Length: 254
Image (cartoon, rainbow, N blue to C red; front, side, top):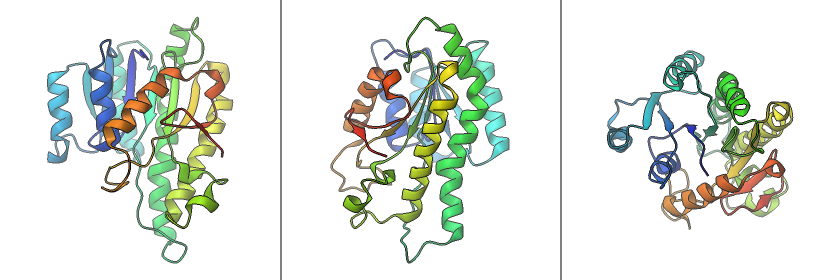
């Protein structure tokens, strides 16, 4: 996979940080990776800042994806660095998963989770659409791919309605599940709406990973998950647009 310019959300830790690290350390790395986080000055972003210091192609951008003003400011900063070029790949990775069950969930829980997991990716994708379209025009001779122009929404197996009877007893996170099912619908709608512009839109399940969300006993390390994700990103084509695919490249039913 060789997209020239990539933007990834939620890069301060976990899958987001590891995506930046593995992509920039490839033999042929992207020309630019925009690594976003809520507060670049925070101590929790120390590893990301160090990575950006080592690799100038990593550009850290402040972004709170639930805040329209923050999105606008981040997009202005990205546009300045793009300097007339398009954006090949947007990875909407940032997300939250609070404890939430049929008994404990309330309206505040749902609103908070939907703002981060659904509305944020929608608003950011919409704001960056002109640059994604520009990349598709720049690479009009290429087939649908992450190297041309793509939106990848990081979703989950838990957002699969068909798989719910198999997974709900073990993972009853209600608001998270519902938000990811909504993100899957957003992905499907984007795939239909942006097809004529040459933009690939796919939802991706990273697996059950040892992150703050997945917990320390998850079967996958962050490194293993991201290694798989990077391979899958490089293999995506038009047939993958509007579907949910796993870090191993397997299609997951809606």
